[in-house]
Length: 115
Image (cartoon, rainbow, N blue to C red; front, side):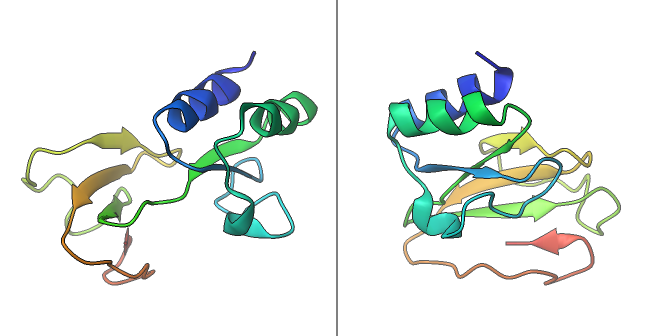
């Protein structure tokens, strides 16, 4: 198994729908994009066995949003509430938050800041 497949399986086991993205990209590697996101172990194994260099992405569940701060953003390095975090391939960070209502995805809300 690859590190990416291991990560995909961990997310799926925790109930997150997973989808593959093109290597080095945020763009889905499937024709239906996020509609193909799944927790099915067999499908995840198939995707990453055929193309081990694929990136791992997850579909953000309702009641959550992720603040994506790239290095160089005005918010990068600011004090944020303690929450789950992950590193991004470009030295940025994802900060996970729970909310009472859905937060629609938006790109470029500030320079190098996405939701």
